[in-house]
Length: 220
Image 1 (cartoon, helix red, strand yellow):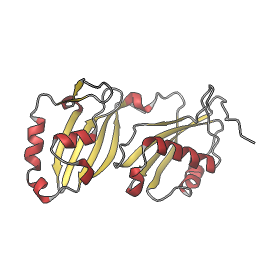
Image 2 (cartoon, one colour):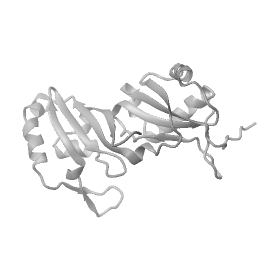
Image 3 (cartoon, one colour):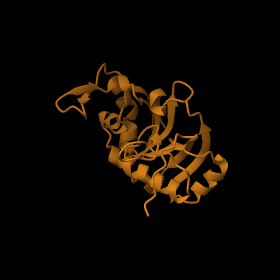
Image 4 (cartoon, one colour):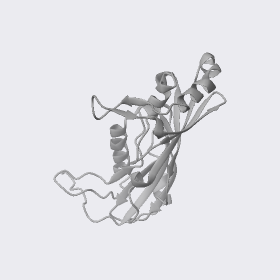
């Protein structure tokens, strides 16, 4: 028989910090949400579900990763109907993960905390895999881009409109073998790493891109 999702009020909120690398970086965001739901159900975590005609497990990511980009410090909140011991369940979950996913921590978060997206402000990236010719001109490309007062780009959600990418680029630093970037993220604006690299004249598909950190403006 089909199990009825438990829509009881949440008793606990856990925050999962994990890495998504190697072939796992090609898993899209919606597929990843379904993946985590299957993992949690496989280990019998008492997931809390939303109300309504089609209840869904209460899972919330800090920020979606673009396909092909790895993540070193990704964050996912999950709500439970029964309190559990995080350390015990961290081990159980870890035993059910395929290659490419690694758990760094599973910790309790206050039920009253706002959604992570509300306080997310920036994301940091590391980019490697540039060819020697690109590395020779990298500093000049970065300086030229940062000197621009505006970088109009087509709007993804509103065809025919544009938006300014420049204010969403907070820092670009050439490093040995590649780049380190700090870009706007969250409700206040979100810079797509692929568009920033394209603005530098680089082809994102041929690069190794990793999101190394998510930066919040307050306790999250």
